[in-house]
Image 1 (tube, rainbow, N blue to C red):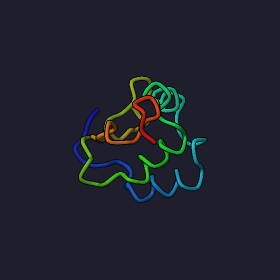
Image 2: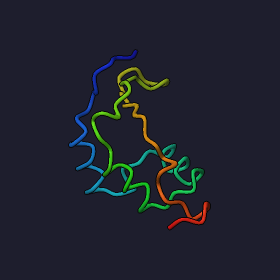
Image 3: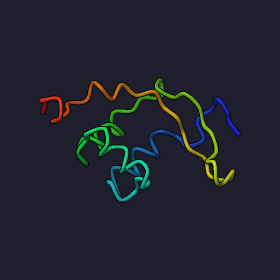
Image 4: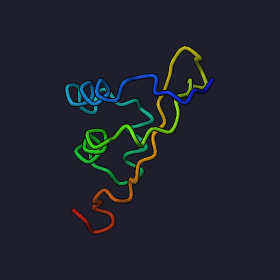
Amino acid sequence: MEKSKAHYPLPVIRSIVAAGGMAVFTQTARINSVLMGLTSDQSLAVIASLKTAMFFKSMTTTNDHHVWRVRLKVMWNLIPSPQRGEG
């Protein structure tokens, strides 16, 4: 199921991540952040920098239609990356 409204308020998400750090990331999010060459600090900075205007859609997970995830469009290539010789 999909909808064009954010299922979770972005300020709540940012607060949860700020309090819990990488421990609140899903396993998939942690794996993909490593594959993108992001450190934990950079991954947390991405969440802290999210804006409501980046919202794309909300959708349920494949395995459980009761669990919602929010899709955002983030320019991750603008984040400094050690693999690209930045930061």
